[in-house]
Image (cartoon, rainbow, N blue to C red; front, side, top):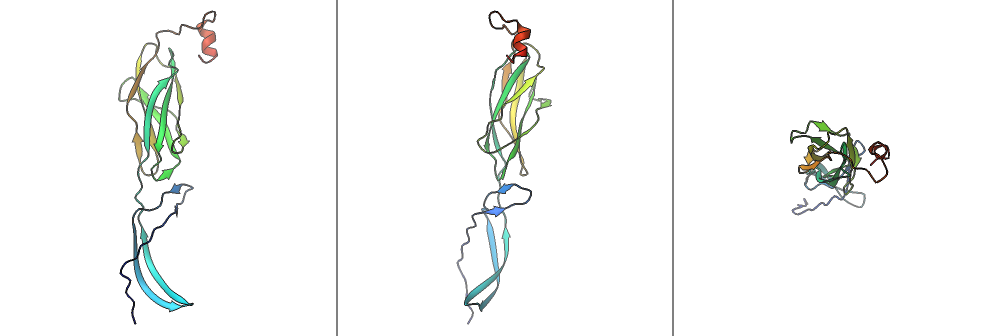
Length: 170
């Protein structure tokens, strides 16, 4: 006697992806039973299975610049979500306008990681724009545009000349 299966639910909890990345559990699964058979002490169901994971692009936040000096600054960002694939390649676009024109080297980061990067060779008393980005196999996401203005000159610490301060990383 044929048996009809009318309501079946499958909840996969893990899908392994190739290339060394981790993949989030799929959110959409379609199973099409094609053959039922009895044997081995129970019923066997043979299926064609399609798993269509819906993966999101990463999300990055641009955090305020820090340690702004006359010719350098530290850009800051946070990887808020790697989307469906981690780690992500994170970095910054920066320049004198929102066209940016410069890109920092990327760093591999996981969700929740911050990624400060030092940029040097900046012009004195100049406003710069920057934004964080995170890229994965799903896409690239950008944080909001932020700005900072370099100092006209590094005042130094009492008793230390600016050249010495520069060599010390100030």
